[in-house]
Length: 388
Image (cartoon, one colour):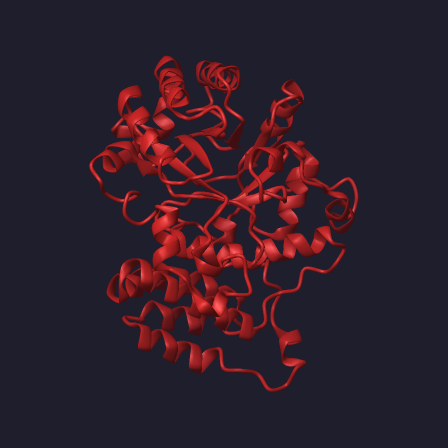
């Protein structure tokens, strides 16, 4: 997934009152924890292709994230025993990624719950077969991806492409719903349309309504079109109008959540009951802790250098357990780049992370740039974590 971390052209609505007041008055919709015990706050970590593996999820949970979604797992790959069967199974993760240094956190023992297994594919038959495998792998929710805008996904007629063929999309949802037990939540990830034509707007509405009629518990709606991919501002007014048209439905919003303030601004401006944090949480697990702080009436503290070091070490160690040191070293470079934005010397640290090739080199960067600070006031000099 191409990740643009400095969006341009964003126009934020004016909050009806100060964000800290909005956050302090925010409560999770009781329907959410009733459906998914442990999902106790109105925000969560999205499924992010190439990012949101078990390591990223466990670090997010250690910092207050109440619910996570896997990156999209292809139905055919699942059926053939590939990714998803081996590296995303929550039970295997618990066996392989117990981290003693996280024992004070919810992530202790690799406790990657509550968790949605997100499935993506083309035909009702293979999607049902893949979903049935996920049901047996101890996921808490099954999420169907009808949103991915990546070109190779669209060319294979899956993900966001299905918004162009509503009959096929609805048939897939029906097939998955048949194999997901009634006691297990099933949800859908959508974009607001394939493009901005009236025909595609009608397609979205058909699929959206059908999802709830067949018993889906909520939808997460990204406020860009499939053709927009990840470029240009999302349309929060679309989410606002959608909620107004369907006030009785659980609807989660996605798009342009870059700071902790954005979470509460979207809740207040659009009326959605939950906010999906996607690119804004890459290298920034503290956004979840900060959101909980704001809800508790406390200021959203930026991460100190020591907290950054610990998160970086935990993330790398978990990644090594999941993928092996060679693969983890390559994968963690992209996370180091995002984490570096919180450092007082972000450009230098970014370049050093790009050059990392091993765990020892990773530790060398931490020892040089994230050394323990003896002066307790030094932490106050760190830049605010959310504005990058």
